[in-house]
Length: 91
Image 1 (tube, rainbow, N blue to C red):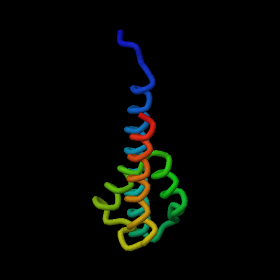
Image 2: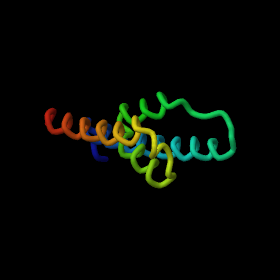
Image 3: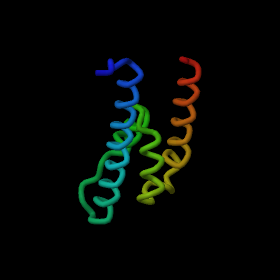
Image 4: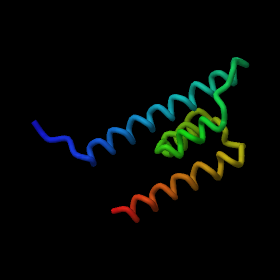
């Protein structure tokens, strides 16, 4: 059996947080269409900051959600760029 190392754990975490973020954006879009209680914008942005920026960006594109809000339109790509830069700085 192959040993699980820090890289495996990080990749599993990133996959999980991005899938969860993508689904959360879809749920919030569905709730918006049904005029139901919504997920807070701070929670949506927090998911991106916690590593789900790719899922957030994909969720915005696929679900057409939050694409006109400046803090999402510009914030999500900036978060993603910052995370990529951090990855390169730490490696």
